[in-house]
Length: 363
Image (cartoon, rainbow, N blue to C red):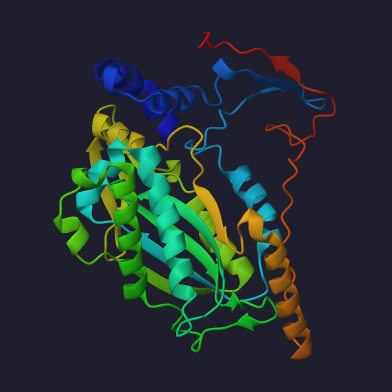
């Protein structure tokens, strides 16, 4: 099976030589890390089987958040940490997108625009949900930035997980929406989101870079229920640790062209073939700025509101006990790494591995 790392190792040097003057430091780092991931460049461990004397080399991973190989264990650790924030209630997922006319500015000013989009989307949801005709209480928001479609087209948008309900202003009651299906109006969320982004662009000095019709057209938002806490968290984790292109989606590579599977707007999956240079270009435009935080917390989930979060938890747990419901136990995941085994005979390695030093050149 062809991997993205192999494509980067083959075509990355030529791409860097051609576009090196225009590459961001974060882009250079991703190309370097993917090419070095699990190779002698990063060093590793040499294991010797006590049963069959087979020597097995395990190279170190790059741990880059854009690497397809280095996200599985991080996802499980993140899930285990986020379970402590969950409230015993149902959840909704809201998605706010931006028009095509704003994407060019977002690509050129990523650090500023991405922060504006996440903050504006979360505060728009908090503003709409606080209205008495919808929820009328303070809810929590876990916002995740997403920048691509399945075909790796640049399309920044924000996914937000939030409890279906909110804590009252007095801090003594939990308020639920009138209808469990109609949580929040999408049109109201999109309108408030657009207004907040417009004000933030004016304050950041980016307003004149955006065509005027962008601020007059109707923006798009979507809200839907996603079930209980554990199920909702697993749903959101797909967006947190999803990579623009995973290895399992690559079906063909001949040195010049790459074919991968992607879904269209109707949900049908089919092959997409790109020149290897275009594939790298599309992949790099989804690389986040260095140290950018793509998961942020607002409302009850904000660090400053953890006391109110615990008050909401006590109210919801008391309500469950009063009506005789017991919450389902959370799914436990063993995130401890298993002791390595011999790939030939399956025996466990009883002795410590021999370190293999790094062979990469100085940065």
